[in-house]
Image 1 (cartoon, one colour):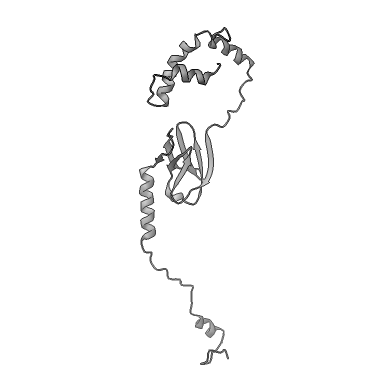
Image 2 (cartoon, helix red, strand yellow):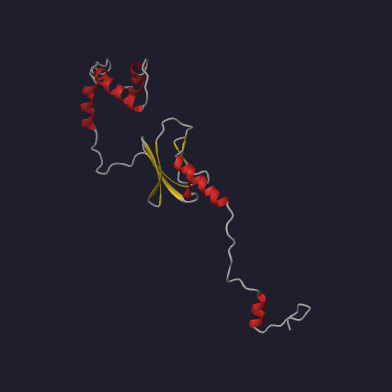
Length: 180
């Protein structure tokens, strides 16, 4: 229990290599029985014996589990990426400019808009990464092409020549442009 982080750094980590968080946890789980069986000089007890005393002094957990992980609500920018813990994750470009809800835990980043999932990615532990879904890239390309293609001319049937109104209301203009 005492100096746990320092003890891990000096007694567990040196000489080991890890392929990822799961490998770290597997090796740590295998090593913990050895670490907990030693007698600590200062307390004259084993750490696994002291856990029982610590747990007896703790309060019970609340009936409703606390919210854990990362949660945010942001407006999706034009580049259709959201940033979570130093990494950029792509989102469906169809919702650019709208508010999206971003939730992340240790394993997954999920982006929703109006209750619909518009992006889901495995969480990356490193920072400075750009994680892109190929479907989002294809959607962005299609939207850019649609925007760049000429649109058919819109004929506004409601727009009339103002002379029609002059005629309807009996307004007559002379040749100098003055109303008679």
